[in-house]
Length: 232
Image 1 (cartoon, one colour):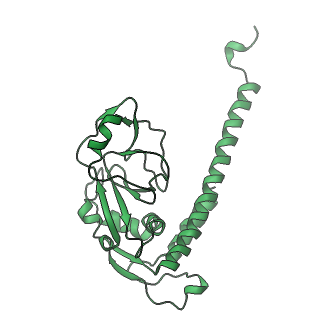
Image 2 (cartoon, helix red, strand yellow):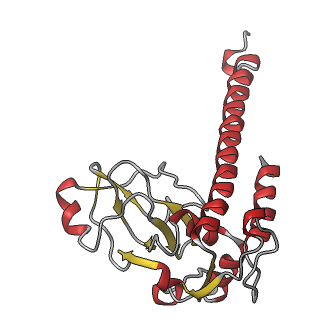
Image 3 (cartoon, one colour):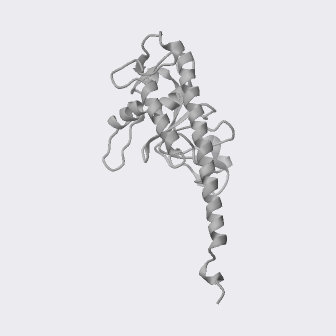
């Protein structure tokens, strides 16, 4: 599992241009004759930014699941933190826009720089400390931007433009104006497919590890009885 994660990290360093460069060190054969990548402000590649920060959502014990910064991890969503918004409050709360499949969730603080894709199925509300990005798909594919934001160069950019000492954060207006580098759509698709396939392998391997840990725990409970169960 760790080897797969290390392999992906190393591959991303090669597939995306380094700071001050507009051509990656590694390109797929069919794109090696292509020119430099386009470099411009991220906002030019975005169709919409949905921002519900600054106000606490009206939580309830049940209803529509709520996605907050606690749920957005580095490349995936963790929905084990169960928080909800009342069904009757949903329309009023989500008045700034409803996210859809392909949108990208980005945490602006506590923690800074985590990224996940919005779920492809289900109904969800958005909470604090995250913004949702929708790309202009004729310029930038959602999966490509998602992988780019996870990459070392964009993470360094985000960290460099952040503020705060103990709890770092970045303003939405600063974030969307970060420098962003991208190739033509076919190359974006190839890079996104390659990295997504690695993500699938990492997820599958992680599930196997979790299953083995559960099996080991169960086996040890059977092999080593607790003190109260030991015959006198």
